[in-house]
Length: 478
Image (tube, rainbow, N blue to C red; front, side, top):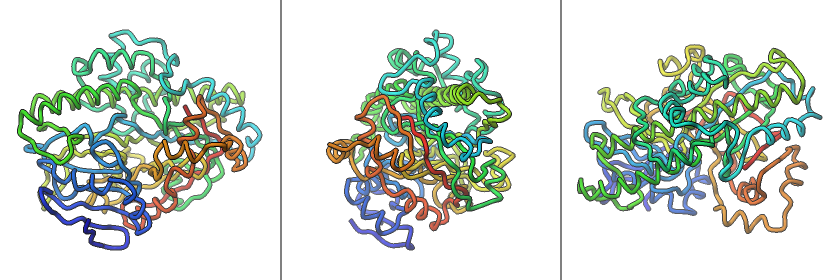
């Protein structure tokens, strides 16, 4: 595969064959070598075949193989003649990250971290099929969750309306239709609000370890040395089922609309087709479910800390910094060839990264830009960045979303054989609790790219700027 160096942190795959646009990969040479281990670069080329795609098929430094699209992939299609592809969103619709700041000085609570982690593990169900944090939803509640998103959770006492202001899209994607989410999907989601799930999902207790941009950090409410909470999860079984259901619909739509693509996993339908419109409304419902889920988990986490530490809400100072999704497709207005156009922007394992003064971010943050939340592996650290104008110009306002895997789950299981990862994490200063040991093995730190290299690459490319680095001291996994 031919690769052209644009600069040290950006590489281009020229158009060839049926590619409608070039491919672009934001990476250093070392990270690019990691991407060549799997088929993810070929997937960048495949995505470039989508009808209506504009500018580039884009990949972030955390790129790795995924279903159809690479994870870490971004593509935008024109509203008038483009398509929507469930593979460009992923199975875990609106998997995302929520960061909560606290007023707790880490040094004052060092000995209580195991108690905090235990309380979080006990209060918030985790693992495959986990349920029970919120009573089984009635059909009316299910409809409200899918149509209202995080607001449904707030109306039932899980947090405050202020949290909606600091959630992407206000915690609710418009256009959701209860009737376009299958009965099977709704059944899977009936008992999973307020649950973490498994895989790479987690609740993390972090120390704000280093500040790179004091102004932005102050505006975000991040104080060096304080504890913070990271929540990473999505739409659980409901979102998985929505994706699975519509992949079958899209397979038939491809034949109906005579769409020919190099990979059947890119199954898609025109945006203005009945199939495309139904998927978008079902996906919006699943996205809203995920926001309600994270909103409930946040409230459960706050209660766990208050009770465990026996402190007042004022002392805890539990405050939502931001909630951003990284598996979604949304209509946005972007300037293409000096003309504003409405595009369907697919972000799969990619985070929105809007610049200062964007009207689509909280007013309190407009002088510095949108928080970009980048979790790393469970033993290394995470980052808070901020969006830039260059991101808006080059990547449709998108950034990376994490470290990115370099090892399959099967490979990680083999590599972990005979090791005690719980002990290894303790030796790193991290209290780890999990529902299953298998998940811990699959999520071993070595299974991921070096988060520091990934973040350095995206910053030096000018796509997002560092604000703060967080160090994990406690982790809950499924």
